[in-house]
Structure formats: C-alpha cells, structure tokens
Image (cartoon, rainbow, N blue to C red):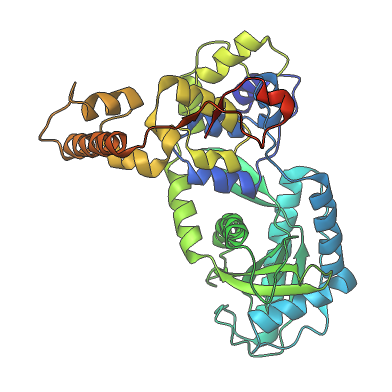
Length: 412
C-alpha cells in the first residue's frame, strides 16, 4: 500500500506529513474521498492547487509562525517551569507543586523511532509516578496524593491510524502528572484578553487537541501490562496563549470530550484508503509537474464533497468550489441548505420544483419551495405597484461641474 500511495503522489515527490490540524479538518468532512486519498498519499495540496490554477491563501503567515515559535520557547524555558506551573494551577491544584520535573530526551531516527521513544518515555514516567505515590493506578481526577513527580514531554511523536494509514502527530507538549495521568498541552499565538479568546480559534484548538487525545489513548491502551490498568488520558487539556498581546503566558482548561467523541466517530467513518485507491483509473498520479489537463483529470477522478466550510480548512477549496458550482450542486450553498432540500441535489432541480415543472406536490420539501416561490412572486408584484416613477429634470443642475452641464439632463 505504501508503494501504491507513493505512485499516486509521484515517485520523486516527498510526502507531506499529516498533522492534527489536517486530521481535524478531515474528520469534519468524512465524506470527501478526494481529501482522504490526497492526505493519505502525503500530497501537498497547496502545491497541487497552484498547479491546477486555483491557488489558495490558506495557512498561517510566516510572521505568525515565527511569533508562535518565540512564544512557545518562552513558555517552555527553564525546563518548562512556567508551563508546569500553569498545568498545576489550572488542572491539578491538589498535587505536589512541580518544583522540579523530568524532561526526557525524545530524539530518535525517523518518525517511527520517535514514536517508539515517546511510548517508552510515557511508560517510564507513568511507572515512576505510580511507584512514588504507591498507588499503582492513575485516577486522573486531579486529587494527587503528593510525593509523585512531574514529567514534561516536549514535542512527543504519536501515531494514529486513519483509514488504514498511519498519521504521525506532534503535540506541543504532554505532561505526566504525579498520579500517572496524562494531559495534552496546546500552545497558540492568538491572544487571551481578560481570560477569554476568540471562540472560533479556541474551537479549532480544541478539535486539534482532541486528535492528540485520541492518539494518546491508543498509546495508553498498548501500555497495559502486569495487570495494571491503562494510564488515564485526561479529557481536559491546557490551552496556553499570550496574555493581552504580551509575551506573558495565560492558560485555560478546555474540556474536549465532545470534540473527542465527534472526531473519533468521524474518523471511524472514513472510507479506507485502499478502497479509494482501488477505484481510481490505472496510472492515476497527482504529481504537480504533470500537464494541467492530465492533473485535472486525475483530481476529478476522485469524488469530493465541497462545502463553504472547506474554504477555511482545505487548500483545494477554490478548485472544488468551481467544480461544485459548475455542476450546480446545492452543497456549495452550505450543508444546512443541503440537509433541508432532501433528494434535490442540484440548483436546477430546486428551481424546477419551486416553479412547478417537476417534483411531487405531496413532498414537504417541494411544497415548501413552491410556497416560497409564490410568496416571492407576490412580494415582487407588490414592489412594482408601489414603486414611484423616476423624475426627470431637463434643466441643468446648478450643482454640477460646468463641463458636465453640457449634457443638459440630470437624473434625480
């Protein structure tokens, strides 16, 4: 399968890693086979969109990335002292204060090596925390008994199976509490003003953190041994942001149980990549150096499910929007509109049903459309009857420029 995906991507094209942001967007639109196969094959969708003639400005600016990296380095300075203080304050105030924490070295060769090293570090940290507290189990309730130790994993590597293909994920940090439970930490560069932040950005961060929680739960399930229960992955993550546009850190606990449930359910609904690849025509390739016509045919051979929400989540959104509009698909108007229209899948079908040219009058959707069309026609007739006639003044308007008065007519 890896060879097949490499052929789809292009033998000379390096794969683009699938991150948590992309996984969250993919889970929000599980019916889009086009994105599933492109992400699974590691295709750079931004480069592909430019090659198709529909470049997208989707993504973060270099300034925002640099500012975010600077802020993250500041938060993690001194062995993560400030970061652990925030975790203790917001999530586990009953535990022993993190006077000194372990920061294991997670360097290894390749993503598989880093994933194995992360799993080993999590196992060792959990075992040490349980041994120090003498509990042998992790409750994850935030009522630490003291005596345990804190462990900070800086940029660990996790793996999550997505439609039969592994996706390697790198959260900003994972903290092991003194009771052996695990917490995901998300560090963002958008500000937190008076204890609150942009709800849309917080929601996106919560969905991204939910992907990390899912991946951590798979790691925890594999660490069960000697009759001990699996480590607890906390469903309250820590969101760290700049405080009031400064470089000082502010934090808030975010409950991601809803996002975790939705994301897990949507990812499980994804069609397996093998099934999508088997349905493609022989010789299909998404290499950006192919002729535009051949590349367009390859992309169009995979069905897409475009919705306006894709504009903020996918680099191919402009290309898919053009195709959706050309087909007259009602999904280009939004998923809520599509859900209201039932079996009517195109704009032409909707207009035909509204004007009585097709459709079953007993169908509630058709009846509602015809009623709406009748009300619109009545409103337009009323507007035409009450509209005043425009007045024409054949005398030059004294307020006009002399050079414009030569026309002799001014409309009021």
